[in-house]
Length: 383
Image (cartoon, rainbow, N blue to C red):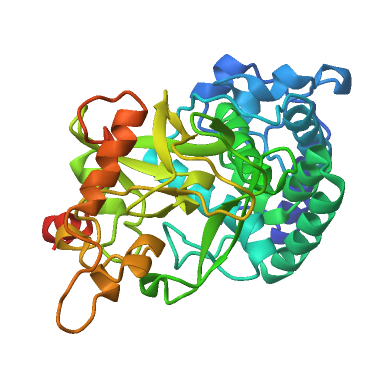
C-alpha cells in the first residue's frame, strides 16, 4: 500500500524561521505612490532613505508615505523638533486652520503645560475629564516653566515640552501643518509669562461659578487708551449647531463662546485671552483679527490693574443679575445687592458701559459687535 508522505513539523518550523530571517535582510524599495495603495502594514515596510536626505521637507510634505512613519524613532523625532524650533516666531501668525475639536484639545494641553504649571492648579478646560499629561510630566512642566520665567528662552522651553512622551504621541498623530499649529498655540501661552508682553496671569478667587479658584489677567506696565495688547491672543473657531451640541456642556465648558451679532453665529474663543474676566465697566474690548482676536484698551491702565472685557447684557442672568464683577461689588448691585433688592448703582449701567466702549472705539451703534453668548440661552438650547 502506498503511504502518504507527511512533512516533519520541526522541519516546517525551521523553514519558516529561515524564510523570515532571509526577508529581514532584504532592502525593500517602496515608492510613495505605490505605498499609498498598498494594503501592507507600513510598520513592516520601511523605506531606505539616506540620512542626509531627511531634511525639513521630509516632515512637511502634506500627504505622503513618509508622514506615516513612526516618529518615536529617536532620529526622526529629533529632526522634527529641530524643524519646529528653527522656524518658530515669538508672535505666531494670526491665521490658523484648526477645527473646534483641535482647538479645544490644543488649548487644554497648552494650559496644562504652561498656565497650570505656574498657578499650581487646574484652570479652565474644554474637556475637563481628560488627562493629557502623565504625573511625572506635570512635575517636569513646572520645572520647565520656572526656567522659562528666569531665562525667557522660548527655544529651550519648546524643546523641553516637545520631548515629553505625551507630546510626542500627540505630534505623531498630527499632519505636519497641525504640528506647526500646535507649536504656535503653545507659544501663545508662553507669551503670557514673557517679560515683553505687559501682562500676566495670576490666581483669582472672586467668582463662585469657578468655586473661587480661577485665573485673571493683570497689567504689568502702563497701558493707554487705544493701545493694542499685541501678545494677548484670542483664537476663534466658528461653531455650527452640531459642534455646539457635541462640544459644549452647559455650566462646564461653555465659559468662552462668543456670539457675533454681525455674522449671526457662535464662535469658540480660546487662547490666553480666554482668561479675560468680565466687568460691567470694562477697561478693554475684544477685536477680531482673521481667525484670532486681540485686546484693545478702552481706559488707561496701570501695573496691577485687571484686564477686563464686557461679556454681554445677560451673560449672568437677566440684566446680569448674578454678576460678581468688581464694579457690581463697588456699587452693591447684582450679586452684591442687599436683601431688599435695592440697587445703589442705578439701572442699565452695564448697557451704558458697553455703549461707551463702542463709542470710544468707533463702532458707532452703541453695542459691541462681539459678546460672550449668555448662559441662559445656552442652557435652554442644549437641555
